[in-house]
Every structure is written in C-alpha cells, then in structure tokens.
Length: 131
Image 1 (cartoon, helix red, strand yellow):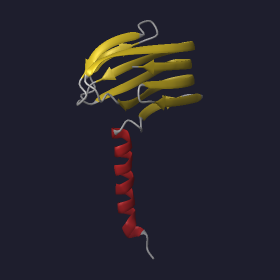
Image 2: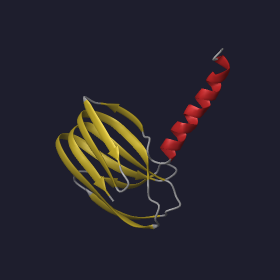
Image 3: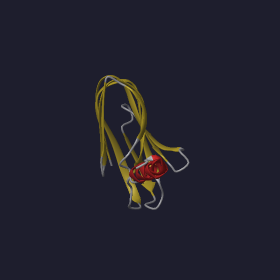
C-alpha cells in the first residue's frame, strides 16, 4: 500500500489542527532563546518561568465578555526585563505592562480578537499576568 496519496491529506489535517489550537488560545507562536522556558497560558492568567531568556511569545487572549479588564503583572525576576503587550487584531498595542508599570485597565469587546505578547530581555525568574 502506497502512502504518497495520503501525505497531502495528513499535512492539511495537521495544519487545520494547529490553526484550531492557536485560534482557541491553546497554541502559541514564539521566538525564544533560553536555558529554561516554561509558559502556561490560562483562562484568566498566564505564568512563565524563565532562565537567561531572550525573545517573545504570543497567543490569543481569551476575553469572551465585553467589560473593563484590569491587568496585573507580578514579576519575581533576579535579572533582566519582561514586558507584556495587549494587541488588537491588527497587532497594534493597546496596553503595555512592565516591572515598573505593572497594572493597567482597558475596556475590551468580547467579540473582538486580542493577543497577549510577552517579550523577554535577558530575563531570569518567574512572572504572572492576571486579569
């Protein structure tokens, strides 16, 4: 039995699966260089533990309710910097959180698509984002 005719079907199913995971906020896109990188996106929070991390990670935020959200970034960094951006559908920044400006409020539309992007610069430690 030849497998060649089934390869395009397998690739199509695989790509559709990745797209569905990403669109539901489960899969992420990233460009990371690190000794240690662990990231857990959640329903109402994200958590990251990093060691010597440079780069970024982005995922779709799950904001199903139209209301004002308060974002709080908790950082326990021994060195480096971390920034979190809330982006709209066109990837334009709506909110920026840092270690020095850890809170922000913004009204979001439950029908719109938003992205959360984390950026690390020589970061070592643990951080959490709650909303």
